[in-house]
Amino acid sequence: MSAAIHARRIDCSPLQWPSRISDAPASNGDGEALTIANDTTWAIAALSIFGVIARPWKLPEATWSVSGAVMLIVFGLLPWSDALKAVAKGTDVYLFLSGMMLLAARKEGLFDFLAGPIPLPKCQMSGMLTRVYSPNSIR
Image (cartoon, rainbow, N blue to C red; front, top):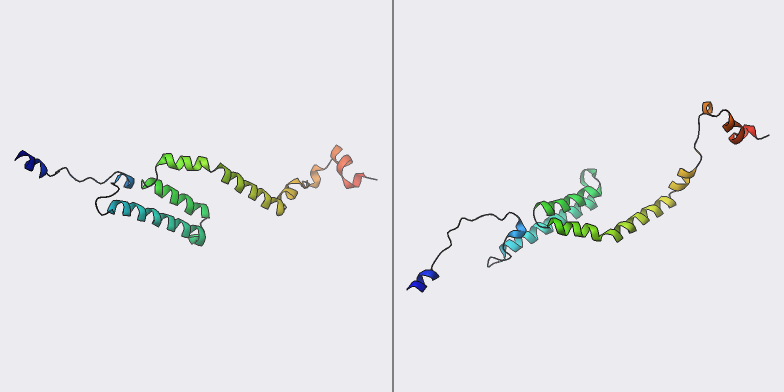
């Protein structure tokens, strides 16, 4: 008789919403919690990709990608520790992108522009500078 009573015991604790979506059980029989987390993650990723490609309101691409990453962390779909590990692992990507920007700057002539002569106003060209560097001083 006592075994039958224990088998019928019902958990009457109040339902609590998990503090993070990832704290929800992976499956409650029909996989609803896992589906919510997956659907939310895919929706955030899709909105971020759309924002990067379409650039609504002419906002920079970085705004959309960073906001998507922040939303994943805020909604608890990605723990802070994993996000920081991902940033730390990206050094090769950051170096590659920096190199590409340097190559583009070289192609566009940025370094030639920066290395060019600095035009000085005529009132500053006096004294020794005038004798040594002024085109009129060479005779």
